[in-house]
Amino acid sequence: MTSTQPATLPTTKRAVVTGGSSGIGAATVRALRAQGWDVVAVARRAERLEALAAETGCEIVVADVTNDDSVTEAVTSITAGGRVDVLVNNAGGALGLDRVDGADLGKWSAMYELNVVGTLRMTQTLLPALRETAGDIVFITSTAGHEPYEGGAGYVASKYGERVAARTLRLELVGEPLRVIEIAPGMVHTEEFSLVRFDGDAERAAGVYENVDRPLLAEDIAEAVRWTVTLPKHVNIDTMIVRPVAQGGATKLAKGPLGFQD
Image (tube, rainbow, N blue to C red):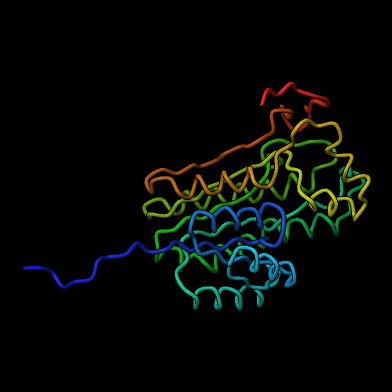
């Protein structure tokens, strides 16, 4: 006798990417969409999100992760639209390159609010939805969270805080089928990271990457995200440090051609 029951179709995975309007966030949206995922890009700039949606077919939500009401409204909209299998906490940034003895306290506070507290807001608010799907929480931190460098203390402190939050959350979720993944990029050449850091000084921002043979691109980190969240569910990549070949550490960077053969 032939069964009349319909075949079970695979469920499309759905990811939420903060800081999704540019750089690593936008590249991650593209990578996951290419994998066949539904993706919600979250960011403050509506026009950038609209352009990304037109390009990739992603969903978009305009929100500011440093604002409680904005995050609550965003998550309400996201969860009303469907399941959530992955949260990529990518929103973040660096402000200035000041020594500790002359640091701008306002910039330190802003970096902590964005990189640590903003990430906490999104994680707390989406955790119930992620528990329903046995989902993944990805933290895009930085090698700055693993080793300090002169002038970077404010950013280092905030990224170390984000990294430790991820490690603590992983301990607290042991016994539940959720993965907590940290991806820590080194030097990544994006259109805005250094420009924002140096208050729009394009010449100074360009100088960061001058004569560096192949710094990482946003797409390299997006591929790391895609790989980690598509591994078998019993495999957790606790921490992945990703650097360009030219960068040996936070204070060790080669300038000039490296002789790549491809």
